[in-house]
Length: 609
Ligand code: M6R
Image (cartoon, rainbow, N blue to C red):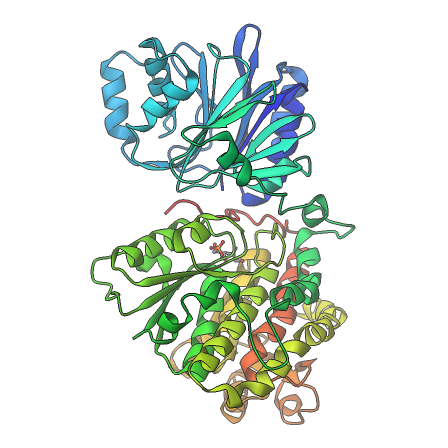
């Protein structure tokens, strides 16, 4: 979704802003723009579509200036047009603004400003901010920072903002509320980005803005945080958590493939320092483990792939810890009838930690006094700030839109959490085999990655199909759902995931001669039932592709093709079984010549509701 970038320093800003916007491309966008402070005031360039269009425009009409702001826009209020692209300027053109988030009361503010004579040139909610700042400056407020602070008092909603003014050359003012914003300090100036990735490896130190904060960044290197002493500000500065290696393709044709391949190491990172030979240590859980383990009920709230990881977490926690767990799509968890209260715990699961619906669901849980907990990959993200307790994945930045290593990272984090809570409740003896299994996970995932060549040939044989069905039972259900989601988003196949027992209650009508049915048939307590479901599909002409445990002699008797995986405890099935399903989606998307890293209509972080 939208991405913000800013630069104040000694170099020409426009090329640096463009580089930053390139790094933010993975989030998804449909128009882009930059504005710089020049000796004549503010100049801006905006273009619809991919960044090449903005780049071409900047080549034709270059921008000078060493201070500037830029933005990738993912349309919400108004179509993706040049007029609606950011930066937005005020009536006199002397204030420019870029914004992530949503200004909820923009209609009312727009009316008020129009009544005062303001002319609007876009349909966006953002433009009101430019006019409010211009109005504040006109009333004689001495600094841009004061003008921005005064304007913020009128806004309702969520925002990360970067603002420049021709009256105050040499500075950018930034503000955040419920939308991430980072300041990066580098040798050649100070930068601003809604995602650390935007610093493009050139920040040696980073500061994450907190909700309600206003920062001023100056081209001469000085910086201040409104209401925060220089010492307190210094104490919050950290080394960057993202390196260039993390975000480059590193020789791979696509980021998605790189991230799939990174999973053995990613899982090692999730386990590092947490998995002992006989114990689990989870720093973020220690202070609240008693309350979590004694919850009347645990709710999990998440979207998309994170929702599937939560479904896997539910099975683990119900199975090992014996606490009832409800998994809710975060977008369905905001209404008054949700039964959560202070006896419950609510776990928000989000790779980005900035998914709008997940954050709103956690806010509701907090209002109801439930214990809140976050499982996220992004250190300092909104989810981490909102929950205050949780588990970081540490799988490294995930830049391809399709989530892969975050899913297996989340599933691994759930396994750790379930084992830790099981220990808390005194069930430790039962879980020794799982602790040993977790230690083996990276090796098993390496083995699973070796199925790629086989998957390429499977794709070659089925790539004409328009539809695919994924089925699983027990721990295999979240996997079937996730396999279908991956194939939908990356290869645009009409893919459906079901609990296998449901097949004959409707979906079987979709099966015709040659329909690919992908069956999660790894060894488990529900193996026999799974074999029967595969037979049902086969009898209707399905081309059955099974994930099977090495050495299983029954599955090959039913399936047309078997993708063999190591013999793993069924509780860890989702982690190892995800790999061939991710590869299937990737290879199918590539075979169709699609942009697998940035599928159509999708964004990496969904920061609007
Ligand atoms: O950052 P989050 O985990 O909160 O994102 C949730 C979903 O938007 C995300 O998982 C989405 O479904 C992915 N594109 C799936 O690959």
